[in-house]
Length: 69
Image 1: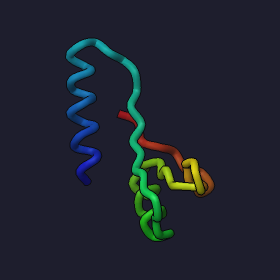
Image 2 (image 1 turned 90 degrees about the vertical axis):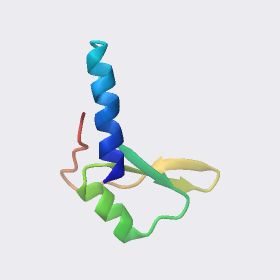
Image 3 (image 1 turned 90 degrees about the horizontal axis):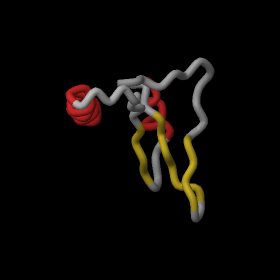
Image 4 (image 1 turned 120 degrees about the vertical axis):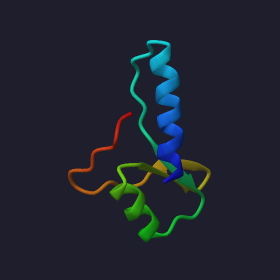
């Protein structure tokens, strides 16, 4: 998954600078099908979806834990 490769690069950059903050991945979209939401959450990513004039984090399944880098 491309987002994991990019987050890994950012994590390596931060580690070189002794930056200990944690990164949490997310994907976003205007119209997202339910199967895409489930797939992203299975890969431990937050899903940000459009809600009218704003955005919100999609409902997370019981026990969901986002992956940290």
